[in-house]
Structure formats: structure tokens, C-alpha cells
Length: 360
Ligand code: DNO
Image 1 (tube, rainbow, N blue to C red):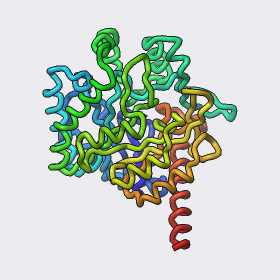
Image 2 (tube, rainbow, N blue to C red; image 1 turned 90 degrees about the vertical axis):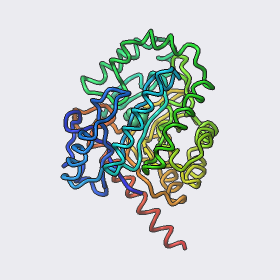
Image 3 (cartoon, rainbow, N blue to C red; image 1 turned 120 degrees about the vertical axis):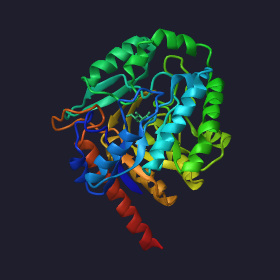
Image 4 (cartoon, rainbow, N blue to C red; image 1 turned 45 degrees about the vertical axis):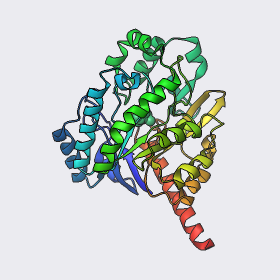
């Protein structure tokens, strides 16, 4: 297991590389270029600059999250080929500096969805929350307003405000796109990028839909074991893999996280893991908690043990944390709670590793 930490860059993050370097066990950062318009090629000069900055701080840059996929590709429009070509060029540029894993998602229009970015818990900490009745009771415009105000001016990965300005137009285009058509468009995309990945040594890791069900009637297809398996089988290559995000998949109690880790881990298709704990409070309703098992609905010991059991040797990062100790930060991406989470995960791993060596 290689522990990494998400970092949005000097310009966008409240956290410095020097702070990340001091978290025990963190080997590197998960980088991104937040200012590149979706669909455009990520320039090599910018990538190498980022890599130098990370390296100078004594950290590694081997994972990128995310190179987002243009809506035209998801919609299967004739212009998609041009965007796929750009996507491949970005991958080639990333491979030149030694990037090993690239995360992406295939969620129409909205990336991760939370209905409250600043829910206050009794202990004064702030967390992100999702209530499906908000989605049912209000429209996408209200959601966008809510997220924008909760962001408090920070740039949120995956929330492209300029794209969302064309909301009605895009919703109209998505009107006739069902799950099957979206799946076909994903397969088309993969058939055109995976051969490039194989040549340049990059592993693509699709991020599950977050949450793993339809919002505002838009199709979502990366939601459970069967559907993920179908995607991986459709283009059967070790480069076509998964970001195993506990927070996304586990909020549907029908998803058995341990069985999924076992299955996808054994076939070598988990390239990256996001570890997050959540508290499920009602059907399709949850909020994100601190990482330890007793804080949420997941048994984190069992999750880390399942990864250990499949000899997981890929990248892991602590996912969304709470905002604590008066920190001013991007929702979910403060320093303190994710650092606590990192230490907890590393502690679990060490204990499991040493105990299992004794049992042999
Ligand atoms: C939210 C993250 C997402 C994730 C993308 C992957 O905090 O989990 O932004 O990176 O959905 O493409």
C-alpha cells in the first residue's frame, strides 16, 4: 500500500506540500491541473512544472485525479473523437513525467453530489451531507446554488460552473440518453484510450458514481459490482481498472464492499483506493464522518484487512475529512482530519500486517 494525499496545487489549495510532507507515511500527492478547461490537452510544460514542485518538496507525483471527460464523449456526439484525441494526448504528456494512474469518472453533468457542504455536528466539526429528499424536492438549479454557497469561494474539483451555466441545454441533450447508451459511450471511449494506455504504461481507474444512484433522472452506471465488472470486461485490459471509493459505493447497503475488494483486488483491477467513512442515517441519506469505524457505518478494520488479504500494493488516499479546529479549507479537503485519517489507516495496516505475519 502506498499512501498519497490529494493536493490541488499552490494556486488552489489551502494546504502546502511542506505540511503534507510532515504527515507520517505519506509518499506522494495526487495532483491535478484545476485550471485546464475540460476537453483541452494538459500542456506538458504545466505538468512538468507541477512535477518539479512536488519533487522539490520531497514527495512523489504518480497519480492524477482527475482528467475529466468532456460531456460530448458521454453524450456520444460526433465531436467526441476530437475530445478523445485530446484525452490521449494528455495521457501521453502525463506518462512522460512518470504518471502511473489516472482517475476519471463518467457521471453525466454532475460529478460528486452533496446537498449540504457544511453540516455542523454536535462536536462543532463540519461535514458534507447528502439527502435524497433534497434532490427529489428541488431542482438542479437549487443544488448548484447550494453547492456554490457551501464552497465559500473555493474551486471544487469536478464542479465546472461554466459548464453548468448551460444547464438547460445539457439536460435537454441528456433527455434521451439511458443507461445502456451511456454504457456504450463509455465503451467507445475506452476502446479508443486503453490501447494508448497500454503503450505508455498508464492505468486508468474509473471512479464510481457518487452517490451510486441516479440524481435528477440522469443515468449513472458505475454503481455496483455487476456494472463495474461489465465495464472492465468490455475492454479487458489491466489498464482498464477501478478507483475503489468506499464512500461512493458503500452508501448503498446492497454493495458489499468486502466482497468487491476481494473480487476486483484478486483480478488486479483496483489501481487506487479512496478510504472514507460515512454515517448512513436513512435510505439514500448520509453524512461523511471521521475515518475510525466507530464514527460511521463502515467497519474500516475489515476494509483495510480485505485490502491486505488481496496483497494490495497500489495507491491509497484518505478521502474527504471533516473540517475541524477552525480550519478554513476546501470542503472535505482540510489538512487536519485527513492527516488524522491517514495515521489511523496506517495504524490499521501495520497492526494487520504484523498480526498476520505472526499467524503464519
Ligand atoms: C470528490 C472526489 C471527486 C473525484 C472525481 C473523480 O471529492 O471524489 O472529485 O475525484 O469524481 O473523477
